Amino acid sequence: MRDFSRDMSALALNTATLGHNVEGAGAGWSPERTIDACAERDYGGIVFWRREIGSRAAGIAAHARAAGLTVAGLCRAPFLVGPLAPRGRQAVMDDFHASIDMAAELGAPVLTIVTGGVEPGTRGVAESLRLVADRVAEAAPYAAERDVRLALEPLNPVYGGNRSCLTTLRDALDICDALDAPNVGVAVDVYHVWWDTDLPRQLARAGERILGYHLCDWLADTSDVLLDRGMMGDGVADLKAIRSAVEAAGYQGLCEVEIFSAGNWWKRDPAEVLDTIVTRFRSVC
Image (cartoon, rainbow, N blue to C red):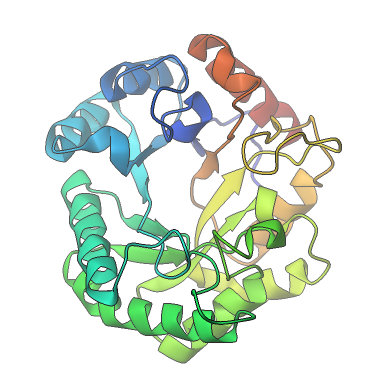
């Protein structure tokens, strides 16, 4: 395993950790201010959300490069299925292509896909997963033309109904196997996979298809399964064991801290949050 106590270059901030994924949340720092604060603390990279980029992707990307940060990814593609997805297949695909275009303009090599929940009018997840596979298969060649890789991110099963019919790394890899597209892989988020006893085997199976690794923690007494994630070390996930398995599979990329915390970390001074991340990254991750 890499020694994070001595080397910070693998640390990346997902700006959701400062509340930037939700309108009106957090301190409202601009992308440029966030970039500069990360660079001051020797972060290696940053991941943005579409809502904060708008039409300024090229300028924000230039600012990040000038500050010495890698733009590691973009969150996210639209929900592809389920009750929260755009209405109608064409609307889904148009938005999917728009998210790929934004990632390309930003210079983000990876676009994260959160699939969306169970398709209205169906039961269980089989039909929804089939639709997801079809829509990713259709978009993958376009993404490849733009040098963008697509990372399927399984979510914790608590989100199965409305946010993600894809709940295990096994199912994500099954889709990857079926599509056999070189630019389609998976994102591994501690919050969503820490509980899975089959995780080590599936990570070994994933190998070079791991396109992203996301850090946070699961609080034993979480008050909100969506917006009460823990800072690394405050919860019950075995962070070092998971990273050991991720790296044994071959992943040596950035480790992206992504903490949705409306009642705690989003209410704090962003400088305190960024400093705490550095301390925890060096000691518990």
